[in-house]
Amino acid sequence: MIQRWGKKDPAVLEESLNISIEEMNRIIKLVEELLELTKGDVNDISSEAQTVHINDEIRSRIHSLKQLHPDYQFDTDLTSKNLEIKMKPHQFEQLFLIFIDNAIKYDVKNKKIKVKTRLKISKK
Image (cartoon, rainbow, N blue to C red; front, side, top):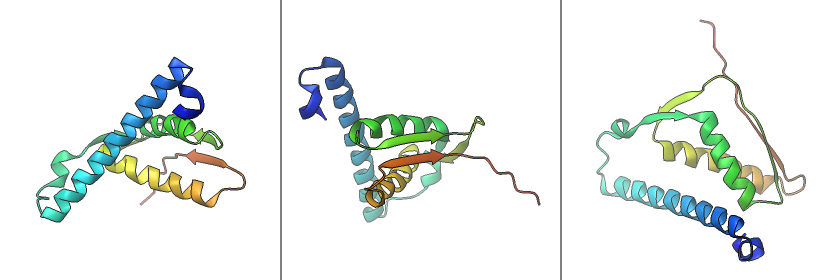
């Protein structure tokens, strides 16, 4: 992205660098977690869990993905309800990126990805 547009446009350069830094931080967190697992130092993972605002995280990731994959169309249909989950934020991010990476991998023809969120309350 930087090579295509960023060298001449300061705004694109800045955004490209920010996305690159986000990706590097994500990779660093992933490697650190893998190292923890291999050392057996995982005592209480739940103590690091935080409230993740799902729709906000999806919007943030989609924004970055649009820059990384300009040939794809990303659409969102997110519920107006405030969706939250308790977990490590980078784990949610990693899970979401796995789904999106698979969508990109298997939709090379249409190049259109739609992400929807819904809250379903089950009756017991």
